[in-house]
Length: 179
Image 1 (tube, rainbow, N blue to C red):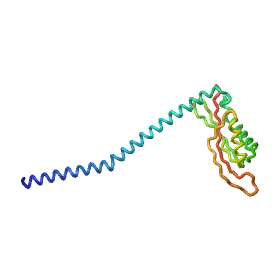
Image 2: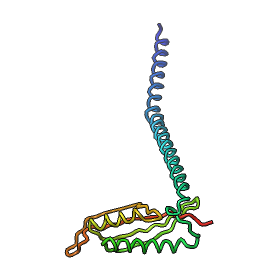
Image 3: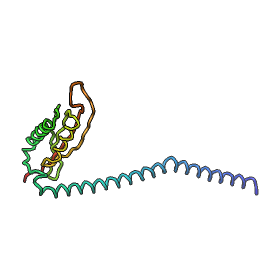
Image 4: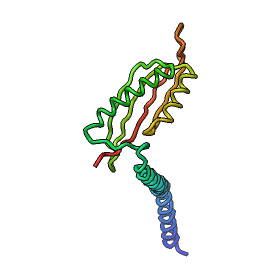
């Protein structure tokens, strides 16, 4: 083999080596992270599909409950603000009846679509343990059904106050629009 042939072979082998190294760097730096992202996107798409299916199941369950007037009340569109105030007052009364002390409450009305209106009350109150359980039990048995969306309980005893628990909660009702 002549020197020029050897030199050509060395150059070809060097170019093949450099091409391999360049490909590995491209694969390691660009293609593999994209594959990982693609896998994550597929996982998120699966989760989204499951959530959409769960949302449809809940919507069907709510639609089935529309026939039960004790569960979801029919209400004219203009009456929802009054219902928000009524839920707020009922909640404050239920707190007092359970032996708690209401601190503050605020009602909101949200049109959730498909003919449903959600009325929520954000409340703060102080309870003892027995009073809090009594309040939650009374909320369970109310019609229309009360959904406890959030509940935070913080022990904050104050000297001379028989209510050692500071409670923040969001309670909601669903109503259907009257035709």
